[in-house]
Length: 135
Image (cartoon, rainbow, N blue to C red; front, side, top):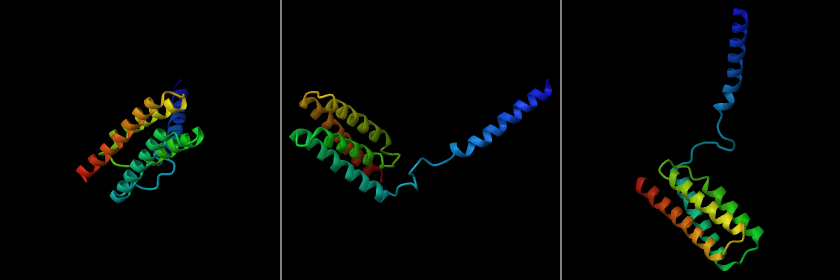
């Protein structure tokens, strides 16, 4: 009976050692923490992309596939903003962006998509103000 417990404990400890390096690894694609200057650039580019997406929704100038690609590019760019002071606002803006994207994808009224997109742009702008206040 004691030998079974010892074998089980040994097996569990070896399994834990095997899993430890993967849990401590950096996320894929992450090289190092962003500098203040890189964060300022990321915020500015995200705001510009969000305004471009808002204008494209208002003008209805892009095909659905192109518009969905623009939403994706905007989301990817916003995720490069690495600042603890703006993390919650970034997540809030990405949530609003996701709602606007979903409304657009489902073919909702253009006014509804515009309203959701305007909220996302406003939160991205609030994020810039918050970052500037703390840095």
